[in-house]
Image (cartoon, rainbow, N blue to C red; front, top):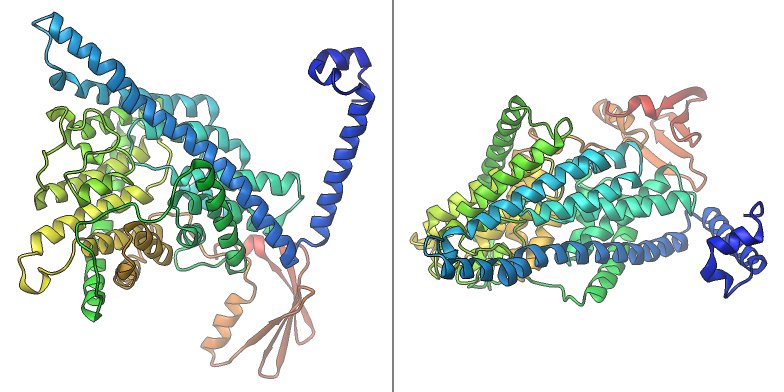
Length: 571
């Protein structure tokens, strides 16, 4: 800035020149830079202190709340514009006028479905065009991989993710905003933690996790469940980044308050079922475990179907990375085609679940409401039969596969919930004539199947249970849902859907512990404040000193060893 003369600076900054002279502007800039450097040094000097972590949790919670609000306002505006304002204010009146003017022009209810097909195809193509010129934004498996391998989410993926996910939602694809919020908030906190606070290594990864947990907590409206989901989904069995859990939940609470406060939205139950689950006993737990077995079978069916659909796409030359535009247009057309035939399968399913719970409620987004069958509510005001609910479930799973493989971006958490609820509704309708099942409310099979199906795919039994209990408003389903989730998890451990999920690689002595325990020895590990670990077993002492992030020095009975974390990853 010092190399630029005053006249040039005044021409570039005309608005500032009237208020502040160039010399004063330079002084203010230097003062601001000095204060930022002081904050950065203060944070780095106490970066492991609880007070610093609490401050980061609050700061990143506010920041993530702002990011979540901007993104949510953007895609909700897109939805309102494309699926409410334009069709009701522009398209329908024009079609009615055409029908009144020309006898040969068909009635509105006979051609309105063309709008759904057109919008889905166009926005699907826009998804591919965005990726073609802005780059691939990544997805949930890619985000999981970045956390494990890099410790942060690249900020360069954020613009493409922001646009692609909003186009995917506008196309009516079976992916929701949750994965986009996870990536956007995680990338934002990663960038700030690296560039402003200078965090690296595991500290940078912890800050990334704060942003990820905050984004999901804000979207779900469930602070604890949403925060734990972002921590659970990184691994196949349980949360392993345990040291950041408390601060992550704190960040989620702050983000939820900021986001919902700005959006003026309440949080709590969003699904209203006809009957409540008032009393829970041991039979409901057994029922939940049985539903977990069924959910595991449905999940395995989905994984197998997804594999064959992927092969078919590749045989047709539809690869999301090699031909994103073609994939986008074809995927958008298929999503729209499925949508006009079975309107409940459109969109990510969060609000469509309310229609499944009570079919008299109209579908919230799609126009026309009845798809190819007309403008009225799909299937009229009567309840869906059990076979239709089953058809909706498996068609939704197919729609999820097509949406993912077409390069659309978003999360399959709510779409999977929707498929589980549809299957649960079919199970309730088909078995309510059985004597010992006739008194069960529909919320129980719906939530237990949803919990088992989601857990088999994402490996998140604890958070999924909490989220479903909160969104359904029935705390009584917690234990049955947990039984279903755990049963489904254990039955599908051999078939992971998210390949990038893995155990964390920075837990030293894990292999040594297992080796010694197999030999009948017990080991006690004590980590000192200076980062050195002491292990005592039998007559031997082991010390691990913290050196470079990728190399640790070990000493067993005075003999030196070196442990390379970079080479041991994944082994």
